[in-house]
Amino acid sequence: MTETKSPLADGENIDRAFKCTACSNHWYYTRARCAECGSTSFETYSLGTGRVVATTTVHATPPGVRAPNRLGLIQFDDDIRLVAQVDGPEISAGDSVEFGDITTLRSGDSPSAGPRVRLE
Ligand SMILES: [Zn+2]
Image (cartoon, rainbow, N blue to C red; front, side, top):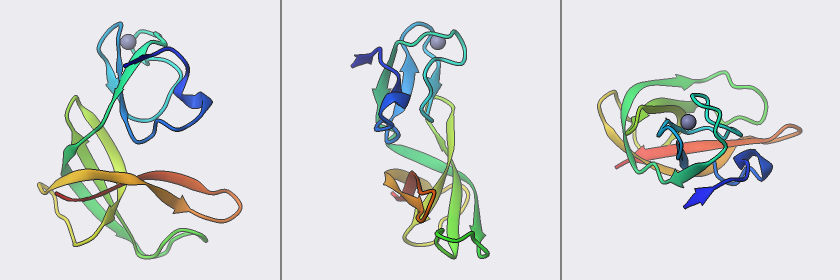
């Protein structure tokens, strides 16, 4: 599917990655245009399975953020890396994980949402 409207317009595409149809650059986080060529034409696709690069657990979290907050740096195909909350059992560098869902990362006055992964 090729889209021409900005993913920032509705924020609903954060569960998918983006591929620029002009230069084939890939990215994850929503942005209005390709960082490489400036095109606003792109396709979206599901991330699927990635590999854990590093993990950490944050025990002192701000109000509205779960504690402990387990996080992983995940490498997906097409050079896409993202930081995600980790669900389920402990993971380590080298483990395969699948993109889970978009979840509430912080509740309260300034809520935000982001990706969560789980062991494959
Ligand atoms: Zn591009």
